[in-house]
Amino acid sequence: MEPVAVWVRKNGEWAIIHRCRQCGQMSSNRIAADDNPMKLMSIAMKPLTSSPFPIERIEEMTRLMGGVGSIS
Image (cartoon, rainbow, N blue to C red):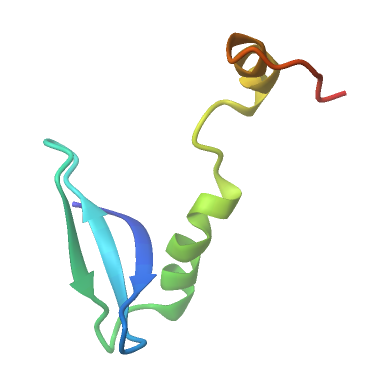
């Protein structure tokens, strides 16, 4: 299992979303008292710091979707 994200439950408690490296199934587990807070923040920030697609292909993907424009 690999941690891929965190989410906050209704009661304000954090939980970690894990994905199985073999089958891709996802599960959620609440954080533990001894979990590293910096690692949790790192997991929480992952979607903001890692593009889900190659950034250098934005222009190509924009054209494929019928859009126009460039990054530069």
